[in-house]
Length: 406
Image (cartoon, rainbow, N blue to C red; front, side, top):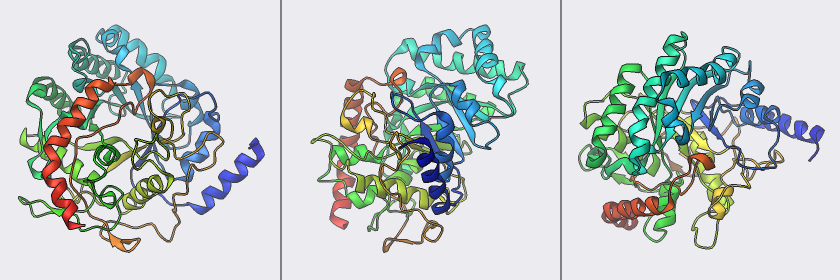
């Protein structure tokens, strides 16, 4: 597709999808050699109603392209920078070079320092995490930017020891010390707690036991939390509430939780159950519709949900299984990887009918992707597989119970 056709197509998209989605964000990964320019990505982001972008670095080309667009940005510092960022001088130099020049034209609102560090079992990284976060925050403070830019980090759901029922959510004991240090930092600085949550991996790991409708926001009977008596009919919201419960058990009841990654691949290998365009369309399309309702989870119905879908584009140079290269909402030529089915007339809120059923929430499962981020932030697959097994053991009983209900 040449450039005139590209812009014509995007103009049509904007007419078809002129909705403003509440706090929906998009992850903008760039591990590919065939992506459109950042300038061409701007109308694509707007066409899906996204108002926030999460970038895995601080690419100046992207930040300049989105200047004066009113799109909010979260920029990243990879795990390989943690040791260097412990030095306040280095942190201030990085902020002055990569963040300050783009403000206020580009709305950079957050810096995430490190990706899923605490579940890597690498003390050389985890020992650097809090000092690096503190140094970056101090740099923002020194430059007078701390009121507009927060500092945070992302976590895998593998930080949870218990996730079912949602009301019993609890963090792993072996991570409690470094986790509480970062939680204190969040509380003092007012930054959000970020979680990467992928119901897809729960289904992929147990397709015979995990009901597909339950993870795709499709009509299903769901499950009731025996302690709170709250009804859940989708897995993502139950995962979020399990995190809220874990935070509350440590006294952090007011800490906001944002979902920094979630998504569904449109293609996979033979052993990657559920990785189809149809399922990706249902997961991401239903999630976007659901988010437009401006309501929270059953446990926090009045809390804003900030969710970043993974990802904007299919990325042809990502390592790993086929699914890793097929999470994008768009192909590199700017055409949709599949139709999201979003129009002004079928945008819905929670507890309204979608495809013949109602939205609610569902059982949680601490699965997470093999390599959902950029190459320099990827995670050891062997460690992830071990925690996938842990999640399977923890949740086999409730998943069997749900299976009997649907």
